[in-house]
Length: 142
Image (tube, rainbow, N blue to C red):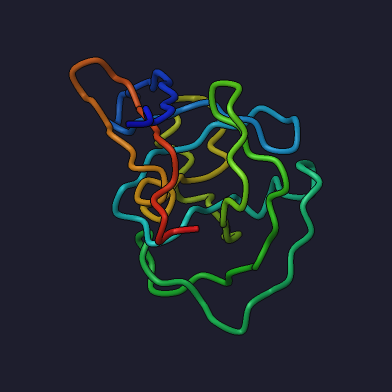
């Protein structure tokens, strides 16, 4: 029986009750909200150029996030790291996240880590220890 490789990372809980982790995208430190209800992982359109990411606007708009519709961009994240572990083929979209900045408790929010990532990497969010534990991807998610 082969053991599953896991990675754990501590998250911060802000005054607004949001869980924030630090990650690296293309070598830049970013703050991400853990959002298990989000149907996609999202990066703020205001920071993607600084992260070295090109954007192609989608014909579709995203709904949710407190408003009816948001212009959405399709982006490729080449290098996404959590706790020094590289996660390949991590899917993100770009949206304007001005309306979620209050959740950062004074720190800039660069994006949201959404449910597709948590499912793919069999994530466990432990509120008792403020720890996110991530395992190898599920076979049907690759």
